[in-house]
Image (cartoon, rainbow, N blue to C red; front, side, top):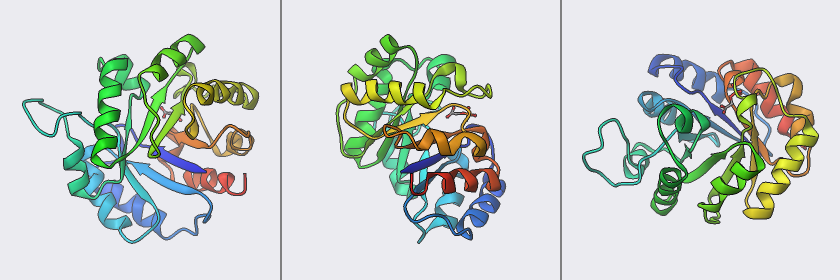
Length: 224
Ligand code: PGA
Protein backbone atom coordinates (compact mmCIF):
# COMPACT_ATOMS: atom_id res chain seq x y z
CA UNK A 1 0.00 0.00 0.00
CA UNK A 2 1.37 3.37 -1.07
CA UNK A 3 -0.03 6.77 -0.14
CA UNK A 4 1.55 9.69 -1.99
CA UNK A 5 0.77 13.34 -1.30
CA UNK A 6 1.07 15.53 -4.39
CA UNK A 7 1.42 19.07 -3.06
CA UNK A 8 1.22 20.63 -6.53
CA UNK A 9 2.25 24.32 -6.38
CA UNK A 10 1.81 24.61 -2.61
CA UNK A 11 4.31 24.88 0.27
CA UNK A 12 7.58 26.72 -0.18
CA UNK A 13 10.68 25.58 1.74
CA UNK A 14 9.61 26.96 5.14
CA UNK A 15 6.17 25.40 5.07
CA UNK A 16 7.59 22.18 3.68
CA UNK A 17 10.04 21.93 6.56
CA UNK A 18 7.33 22.47 9.16
CA UNK A 19 5.01 19.94 7.51
CA UNK A 20 7.73 17.30 7.19
CA UNK A 21 8.74 17.76 10.83
CA UNK A 22 5.13 17.14 11.80
CA UNK A 23 4.94 14.11 9.53
CA UNK A 24 8.20 12.69 10.87
CA UNK A 25 6.88 12.80 14.42
CA UNK A 26 3.66 10.90 13.67
CA UNK A 27 3.28 7.19 14.30
CA UNK A 28 2.49 6.23 10.71
CA UNK A 29 1.40 2.63 9.99
CA UNK A 30 4.29 0.33 9.14
CA UNK A 31 2.42 -1.40 6.31
CA UNK A 32 1.89 1.79 4.29
CA UNK A 33 4.62 3.39 2.17
CA UNK A 34 4.24 7.13 2.61
CA UNK A 35 5.54 9.59 0.04
CA UNK A 36 5.41 13.39 -0.25
CA UNK A 37 5.81 15.25 -3.55
CA UNK A 38 6.78 18.89 -2.84
CA UNK A 39 7.51 21.52 -5.50
CA UNK A 40 11.11 21.51 -6.73
CA UNK A 41 12.22 24.40 -4.50
CA UNK A 42 11.09 22.54 -1.37
CA UNK A 43 12.55 19.12 -2.18
CA UNK A 44 15.85 19.82 -0.41
CA UNK A 45 14.14 20.75 2.85
CA UNK A 46 11.87 17.70 2.68
CA UNK A 47 14.80 15.37 2.03
CA UNK A 48 16.75 16.85 4.94
CA UNK A 49 13.94 16.67 7.46
CA UNK A 50 12.84 13.17 6.42
CA UNK A 51 16.35 11.69 6.21
CA UNK A 52 16.55 8.47 8.20
CA UNK A 53 12.77 7.91 8.09
CA UNK A 54 10.79 5.54 5.88
CA UNK A 55 8.98 8.47 4.24
CA UNK A 56 9.97 8.97 0.60
CA UNK A 57 10.37 12.29 -1.19
CA UNK A 58 9.29 12.45 -4.84
CA UNK A 59 9.40 15.29 -7.36
CA UNK A 60 6.34 16.21 -9.41
CA UNK A 61 8.04 15.96 -12.80
CA UNK A 62 11.38 15.15 -14.39
CA UNK A 63 13.02 15.85 -17.74
CA UNK A 64 14.47 13.06 -19.90
CA UNK A 65 17.83 14.65 -20.67
CA UNK A 66 20.74 14.56 -18.22
CA UNK A 67 21.32 18.27 -18.84
CA UNK A 68 20.95 20.73 -21.68
CA UNK A 69 19.23 23.86 -22.91
CA UNK A 70 15.81 23.10 -21.42
CA UNK A 71 14.77 26.21 -19.52
CA UNK A 72 12.60 25.46 -16.53
CA UNK A 73 13.24 21.71 -16.50
CA UNK A 74 15.03 19.47 -13.99
CA UNK A 75 16.77 16.16 -14.71
CA UNK A 76 16.69 12.82 -12.90
CA UNK A 77 20.37 13.05 -12.01
CA UNK A 78 19.77 16.43 -10.36
CA UNK A 79 16.93 14.97 -8.33
CA UNK A 80 19.08 12.01 -7.31
CA UNK A 81 21.87 14.35 -6.26
CA UNK A 82 19.40 16.04 -3.94
CA UNK A 83 18.42 12.71 -2.33
CA UNK A 84 15.03 12.51 -4.03
CA UNK A 85 13.67 8.95 -4.30
CA UNK A 86 11.25 9.18 -7.19
CA UNK A 87 9.04 11.36 -9.34
CA UNK A 88 5.52 11.74 -10.63
CA UNK A 89 5.25 12.00 -14.42
CA UNK A 90 2.30 12.74 -16.69
CA UNK A 91 0.02 14.31 -14.13
CA UNK A 92 -3.14 15.48 -15.90
CA UNK A 93 -2.29 19.09 -15.04
CA UNK A 94 1.02 18.67 -16.88
CA UNK A 95 -0.81 17.15 -19.84
CA UNK A 96 -3.65 19.70 -19.89
CA UNK A 97 -1.85 22.92 -18.99
CA UNK A 98 1.77 22.41 -19.96
CA UNK A 99 1.69 20.41 -23.15
CA UNK A 100 2.91 17.03 -21.96
CA UNK A 101 1.97 14.28 -24.44
CA UNK A 102 2.00 10.49 -24.27
CA UNK A 103 5.39 10.65 -25.93
CA UNK A 104 6.98 13.17 -23.56
CA UNK A 105 5.50 11.37 -20.56
CA UNK A 106 6.97 8.09 -21.81
CA UNK A 107 10.36 9.74 -22.26
CA UNK A 108 10.22 11.28 -18.79
CA UNK A 109 9.25 7.94 -17.22
CA UNK A 110 11.88 5.93 -19.08
CA UNK A 111 14.69 8.37 -18.25
CA UNK A 112 13.72 8.59 -14.59
CA UNK A 113 13.56 4.79 -14.25
CA UNK A 114 16.85 4.34 -16.08
CA UNK A 115 18.49 6.82 -13.72
CA UNK A 116 17.26 4.84 -10.71
CA UNK A 117 14.27 6.90 -9.60
CA UNK A 118 10.94 5.33 -8.74
CA UNK A 119 8.10 6.61 -10.93
CA UNK A 120 4.41 7.30 -10.44
CA UNK A 121 3.02 7.65 -13.96
CA UNK A 122 -0.45 9.20 -14.10
CA UNK A 123 -3.11 8.13 -16.58
CA UNK A 124 -6.72 9.30 -16.88
CA UNK A 125 -10.11 8.72 -18.43
CA UNK A 126 -11.60 7.34 -20.65
CA UNK A 127 -10.88 3.64 -21.16
CA UNK A 128 -9.62 4.42 -24.67
CA UNK A 129 -7.40 7.18 -23.29
CA UNK A 130 -6.20 4.90 -20.50
CA UNK A 131 -5.19 2.23 -22.99
CA UNK A 132 -3.47 4.78 -25.24
CA UNK A 133 -1.57 6.40 -22.36
CA UNK A 134 -0.50 3.01 -21.01
CA UNK A 135 0.60 1.71 -24.40
CA UNK A 136 3.74 3.88 -24.32
CA UNK A 137 4.86 2.75 -20.86
CA UNK A 138 6.95 -0.37 -20.23
CA UNK A 139 6.82 -2.57 -17.20
CA UNK A 140 9.43 -1.83 -14.57
CA UNK A 141 9.75 -2.99 -10.96
CA UNK A 142 10.05 0.65 -9.91
CA UNK A 143 7.00 1.83 -11.87
CA UNK A 144 3.62 2.56 -10.31
CA UNK A 145 0.62 3.90 -12.25
CA UNK A 146 -1.87 6.38 -10.82
CA UNK A 147 -5.35 6.18 -12.30
CA UNK A 148 -6.82 9.65 -12.09
CA UNK A 149 -10.21 10.29 -13.68
CA UNK A 150 -9.81 13.92 -14.74
CA UNK A 151 -13.29 14.86 -13.58
CA UNK A 152 -12.38 13.80 -10.04
CA UNK A 153 -9.26 15.93 -9.62
CA UNK A 154 -9.74 18.86 -7.26
CA UNK A 155 -13.48 18.73 -7.82
CA UNK A 156 -14.63 16.93 -4.69
CA UNK A 157 -16.09 14.25 -6.97
CA UNK A 158 -14.68 10.80 -6.35
CA UNK A 159 -15.01 7.64 -8.38
CA UNK A 160 -17.08 5.03 -6.58
CA UNK A 161 -14.98 2.18 -5.20
CA UNK A 162 -16.53 -0.09 -7.84
CA UNK A 163 -15.61 2.28 -10.67
CA UNK A 164 -12.07 2.59 -9.35
CA UNK A 165 -11.79 -1.19 -9.07
CA UNK A 166 -12.97 -1.63 -12.68
CA UNK A 167 -10.60 1.00 -14.07
CA UNK A 168 -7.70 -0.44 -12.09
CA UNK A 169 -8.44 -3.88 -13.52
CA UNK A 170 -8.21 -2.36 -17.02
CA UNK A 171 -4.86 -0.78 -16.15
CA UNK A 172 -3.53 -4.03 -14.72
CA UNK A 173 -4.65 -5.99 -17.77
CA UNK A 174 -2.44 -3.73 -19.90
CA UNK A 175 0.45 -3.17 -17.51
CA UNK A 176 1.00 -5.39 -14.49
CA UNK A 177 2.10 -2.80 -11.93
CA UNK A 178 0.68 -1.43 -8.67
CA UNK A 179 -2.10 1.09 -9.35
CA UNK A 180 -2.91 4.10 -7.17
CA UNK A 181 -6.26 5.87 -7.26
CA UNK A 182 -6.20 9.67 -7.49
CA UNK A 183 -9.01 12.21 -7.50
CA UNK A 184 -10.48 13.85 -4.41
CA UNK A 185 -9.28 11.19 -1.98
CA UNK A 186 -10.24 12.41 1.51
CA UNK A 187 -10.19 10.93 5.01
CA UNK A 188 -13.90 10.16 4.62
CA UNK A 189 -13.64 8.08 1.44
CA UNK A 190 -10.11 6.67 1.64
CA UNK A 191 -10.91 3.47 3.50
CA UNK A 192 -13.50 2.13 1.06
CA UNK A 193 -11.42 3.10 -1.98
CA UNK A 194 -8.27 1.52 -0.57
CA UNK A 195 -10.19 -1.61 0.42
CA UNK A 196 -10.71 -2.50 -3.28
CA UNK A 197 -8.55 -5.42 -4.32
CA UNK A 198 -7.07 -3.66 -7.36
CA UNK A 199 -6.43 -0.37 -5.53
CA UNK A 200 -2.84 -0.46 -4.30
CA UNK A 201 -2.73 3.03 -2.85
CA UNK A 202 -3.70 6.65 -3.36
CA UNK A 203 -2.29 9.75 -5.01
CA UNK A 204 -3.71 12.54 -2.88
CA UNK A 205 -3.78 16.21 -3.89
CA UNK A 206 -5.69 18.73 -1.78
CA UNK A 207 -6.07 16.52 1.29
CA UNK A 208 -2.32 15.90 1.45
CA UNK A 209 -1.67 19.55 2.36
CA UNK A 210 -3.10 19.18 5.86
CA UNK A 211 -1.18 16.98 8.23
CA UNK A 212 -4.22 15.57 10.02
CA UNK A 213 -6.07 14.71 6.82
CA UNK A 214 -2.98 13.15 5.25
CA UNK A 215 -2.32 11.11 8.38
CA UNK A 216 -5.91 9.87 8.39
CA UNK A 217 -5.58 8.72 4.76
CA UNK A 218 -2.32 6.91 5.57
CA UNK A 219 -4.05 5.20 8.48
CA UNK A 220 -6.95 4.22 6.21
CA UNK A 221 -4.46 2.42 3.98
CA UNK A 222 -3.27 0.24 6.82
CA UNK A 223 -4.44 -3.38 6.75
CA UNK A 224 -6.49 -2.83 3.58
P1 PGA B 1 -7.07 16.00 -5.56
O1 PGA B 1 -5.86 15.86 -6.59
O2 PGA B 1 -6.87 14.95 -4.49
O3 PGA B 1 -6.94 17.41 -5.02
O4 PGA B 1 -8.33 15.78 -6.33
C1 PGA B 1 -5.45 14.59 -7.01
C2 PGA B 1 -4.27 14.73 -7.93
O5 PGA B 1 -4.32 15.60 -8.82
O6 PGA B 1 -3.26 14.03 -7.77
